[in-house]
Image (cartoon, rainbow, N blue to C red; front, side, top):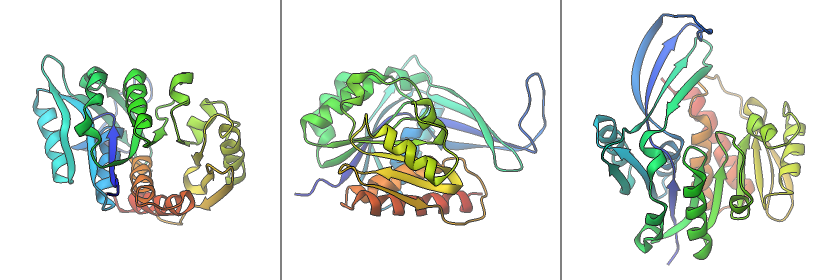
Length: 288
């Protein structure tokens, strides 16, 4: 029976979005025009993006025993994501963030991880969690120990693991050795040792450099597009679609969700990257 469900192990955040004409400087109190709550966390956003791409999606994570946690569970279920392996923890708050978006659609955010730091790695050994799973997604908003435990479980079952190394941080050799595909943006690629990325050509150079440490790599370069090296060592680029940007917030998560939904079908890395690039273009141009 085909294993066509994507498992996301990662963070869940209650996002408070603030719109303002500019991002405040240090010591400045600026005036915003609107605020609203939004479902978030890189893990949750990517799990939802998988489901929106028409592929079965399962989430492993944790929330607090609070209104934020209730909101996050309701959003997962409403998007069609299985939340049976999302744990509600007492005595700790749900993860949350505050993001400010300016008139030019740039944004800055601060996160408070809360329950996301307290998921139990031992719970990842439950065989029921892995029933039907064809692909694992990880990010860097949870402790590395949780990512390593998840990747070990995936490897023991012959399941490929994708790491979206965001936010950028040092990775242990243990985790690097368990990753099948690394996905990073230009800034993250540079923070992992690649030369600065400001074009498709430099993105291709960065992907090639990072492929010395990972079996396959995608480096996204925003409005320029993306560059990749697949598991056979073949490189390619995908130029970005020309769209009118409304907001870049969440574009990376939309990209990952669509990428993984395509890979589990299964499609080649090139086909999946094109589908993901298209999904990201739609995301940045259609938000309210």
